[in-house]
Image (cartoon, rainbow, N blue to C red; front, side):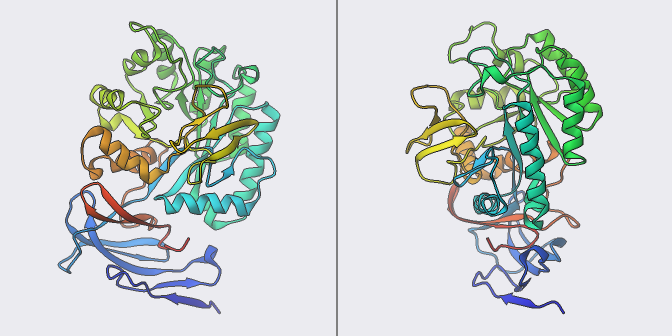
Length: 407
């Protein structure tokens, strides 16, 4: 017999209790929440049963002005979080759950676990190990929507390789592309590569045919090569404005080429550090919001205090300013940004309300991977309940994953 634990929330907007089994991986929940819809601003009642949205309708019930409901945030580039480095070979389920729950506390219920450049055999063994870990927990299966492999098919040019070790860069081959597909099976897979590498255009076409989403990045490709990469199937550009030298030719550089290439959806890191507010606004004016999504590119320091951290073999320092650097170097190496903070920093840079940018960190990144993150009947009950005292003044966020708000 299923034993249920009943928890009644003090929040007046939660009208029904959560019914939770002792094993959270087998959550059976029923609930209803009334709040203002982030898209319309109108009061709505959202109901769920067994982790799935069963009703979303307008309501005449009294709803506090400061309570809002929105889809969960979706982050397509997370290298680590809450002190946990995803590049470690000795990673176990518990630290992975710690990072996942900290992400959820920061508004993000689904993400792509990201692996960075390393020796090929080590990278693939790490990916295989992480898939095994995920399979041991339904909570992890729900949260880790898929995988992002960033490297080793990247530029080895100074500045363009970023914090990745240029000595480990490789040209993509059909065998390696097929191996990635075999390892990840039917999981969503995002692959960042530099299209100017030998055989990269053929690799893009093969990857696309296998259902792998290809994003260009860490690249100094010419306009012609970028256009050919899009024709071969590439659809995204990874963290535009980063992975390039601090000094660029003002007339011809990778920023202008990427912005001038039709068919690319670009990701931006909205921490006010990786991309200046001016450039952030200019990119939005040039491309339009539908061609932009946000990501943290978070590493272990995100959601953790300043100090010393790692991304794989890299030793990193993170100060109170949240800037992640290799000791003695000026280039960045990931970010310490929390997803929910990224939303409000993006709004600040664009000089608009948080509701105008929310989809850039939820619906649009999910759409890039062929996922549905919208608040719709039949979809998983993944959503955020936000409390704001004034426009862009967030005081609390509670995230629900399959109707469960317990972290």
